[in-house]
Image 1 (tube, each protein chain N blue to C red):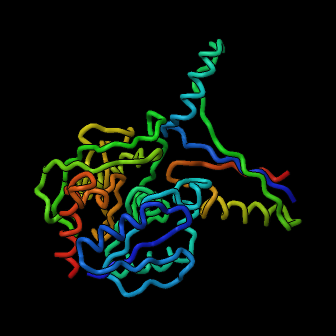
Image 2: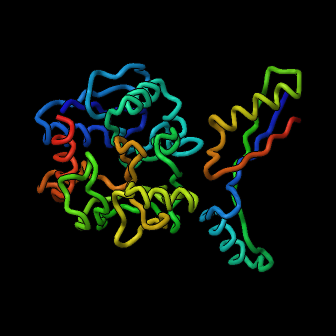
Length: 220
Length: 79
């Protein structure tokens, strides 16, 4: 599986993502600068965590205007897999690739801790190696992870099996405890918790490995 | 031409910052303060003399970047 990680100014989990991808796939991920207008030929594009463009205006709003996002949207349109983690999820909602928006945490505090999630759906390239209903522990680190969408959108997400992860103990006020969602074509996943930080037992756990194993199985 | 854009959260969208400001004001003794909603003001200088054209272009700016219409609404003021 070939992968690329997009690097925006003030991305700060881009190298974590690249390290996790290399560890899991045995291949180096291409690092793609936000001003590049083309992507290398890859199966997976990762939008990493961080504070792209200093979170100016709104989280993800400026990143969505960058040259590389046109290529990312075209990749998604072609059915290519896109994984947006944390700030990457915010960029995906700003871009319209995923519905809804991520707002200030209901408790107003930046939340930085491991959280327990339930894997809600396994019918996807991102979660097929998990068991349905399985609890996993991923870290979160965000101030604006409060998922919002209108009721109609939330009902549709649930009805179509597009809520992939839910918080067991909601840390940010997200609607219906949603931690991660899929697009309609099921090739774009956005989630606030960080699976790339839990691929090595020496640094916090291995619950994120199955997400990458799922992608490798689905895309290789 | 100068323009001012107000971006605020739509009604019904939870505004934790507004809530915190309200609590703080209550704490300062401003007991009459009820709900508080926080927003943004964006001032722009435009190289445009036609107010109608300016308004049209500002609307497009709001839709494309200045507001996230999933959660926010906007008002445009030509000054």
